Length: 451
Length: 121
Image (cartoon, rainbow over all chains, first blue to last red; front, side, top):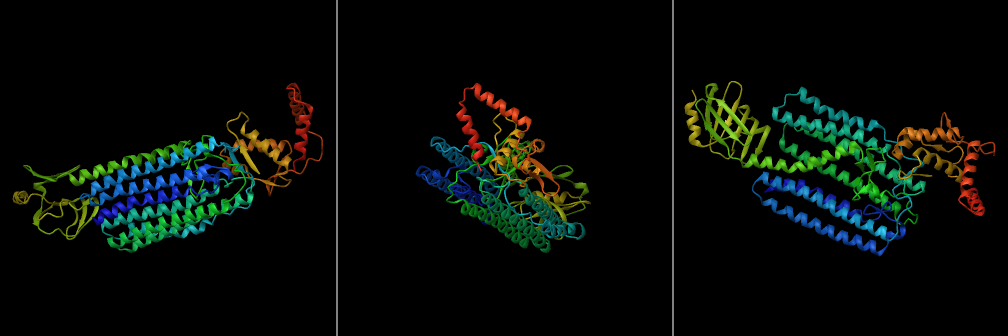
C-alpha cells in the first residue's frame, strides 16, 4: 500500500500544479483574464467577475472529483493495475482540465465580443520598436561549473568498477544530469531572442515586464543547472546505496519542482503588480492566435517558440512544422502511456510456466522465455533462500523478478521467479547462471534429470 | 513606438514597416539620431523573414529617412536639409489628391487632414 501511495503521489502531483496555475489566470495580469485581452472597463465588470467566480467554482469541483477518482487506486493489490489506472487517470485529468479552461476562455471571448470590448489591433502583430534598456544575458560562465561537475559521474562510469546493476543506474542518471545541465545552458538563452513584453506604448512598462520574465527565466535555468549537477554528484557519492539513491532522487525532484513553481509565481506576481489598475487601453491583442487560450497557432509568425502571455515560460507555435512535430510527439507519448500499463499488467499477471522437455528446461512468462539445454548445465542445485538480488535490466515486482540481475554469491544471473516461493532452482552453464522458481516436484525432477 | 503588422491586408509587410517608421518620424515618436533595432532582431520580434525587414530598411535609407552609422547601427537621419519634397513623394501625393478629387472629397476635408498631420507633435 505504501508503494501504491508513493506511485500515485508521483502521478497526482501534476493536478494541483495545473489547478493552481490555471486558477491564477482568473486574476488580471498583463491585461488578460482567462487568457482573454480585456480593456480597463471590462476587468471590473460584474458580468466578467461573476463569470470568473463561476469558473473557479466549477474548476474546484473538477479538481476534487479528479482527486476522489484516483484515491481508490491506493487499495488495489497489483502494481501494474495501479499503474494503468494512474496513467489513464492522468490522461483524462489533463484533457478535462484543458477542456474546462478552453470552455471558459471561449465563454469570456464571447462576452467580450457581445459587449464590444474589441481591441482595434486585434489579430495584428504588435512590436515595440525601442523597448528601452533591457537586461543583458547572464554570462554563460555561470553554467560552466555545473556542466563540468555533471561530466565527472559520467566519466566515472568508464573508469570505476561498480557492479553492473549500479553502473547502469549511475550511467543513466549521470547522462540525464549532463543532458539537463546542457539543456539549461541552451534554454536560458532562448528568452533573450524573444520580443519584449509590450502591452501598450508605455516603454517603461514594456522594459519592466521584459525584465521580470528574463530575470525569473534565467534564475530558474541557473538553479536547475546547479541542482542537477549537485544531484549527479550526490548519486555518484552514494557508492551503490539504493536507499540514498532514492532519497536524493526524491529530494532533487521536489526541490526542482518547487524552484519552477516559485519562479513562475514570482513572475506572475510581479506582472500582476505592474499591470494592476492600469487605465490605458491594450494595444496588443493576440487572442485569435491562442487556441483555447493555451495553444499558440499563428501561421504568420515564423518563430517556433513564443513567450507565454503570463508567467515566465514559452510555448510552441503549432503552425510551424517543428511545433506540429513536437506536439504530435508529445501527444503520441501521452496517448500511448496507458499501453505501458497494459504491458505491465501482462508482466505481473501472466503465470510462469516451467516445462521440462526431452533435452531442455523451458521457462515462459508473458513475453519472455528462457531455454536451458540440459546437456550444457554444469552445476545445478536447489536453494530455499534467495540471496539479495539487484536488478540490472528487467522486471522487479512483489511477485516477479525477471531479467538480468546481480545476485550475491552468484554474480550476474538471469532470473525468472516468484521471490515468495519456497524453493529455487539454480542452473549454471558455461556462460550463464539461471535461477527459476516453480512447482517443487518439477524442480526436483529437473534436478534429477541433470546429467 | 509600437509597430503594428496586419497580415490580413494586401499591403506587403515591408511596406507596412516602412510606412509606420515614416509615420513615427513624422509624429516625433522617432527622433533624429534614434537607434532602430538591427534587421535580425526586428525580424525575430515580428516573426518575419530577415529579407522583409532588410527591404524596408533599404527603402527607408534610399528615401533618406535612415542611415547606417558604424557604431550606432541603423539610426534616424536628421531632418532633410531641403524642405522640397522628393520627386517620388510629390508624384504620390499628386496621385492621392487626384484620387480624392475624383472621389468627390471636399477640399476642406483634405486640408483638415493635412493640418492634423502637420499639427501632431
